[in-house]
Length: 136
Image 1 (cartoon, helix red, strand yellow):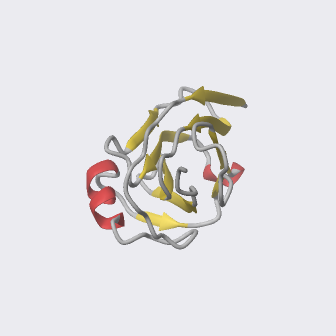
Image 2: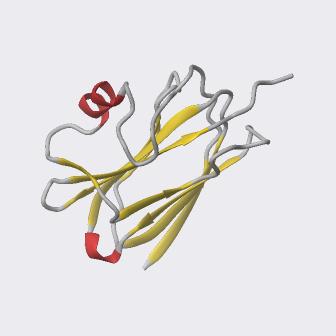
């Protein structure tokens, strides 16, 4: 099993208000655009780990843990809801992954979503809101 670490600098704008682990108000639009076809399940087989509140918005760690019971992942997506370019990363792994880590830049508070598509076409989704204090 492999781990992939990706560094990404993303500038996010807007205001997000998503409850952790649940769809945000803009979720349906994101789902249609970035997770075409297949069933979507918010479940515990995929974990999104990032701080609840960040002090240094220019380097926000994001870790996606893929449960062993997911099996082979055909596609993995990380979406920053309030980003002008919302798709942070899309990965098509060639072998089994345990986790993926990356750093993103946040200018404002936002919901972050991750989704993994399994061979049966199901998108397993996890979400978390990240609070970014206003700049001084």
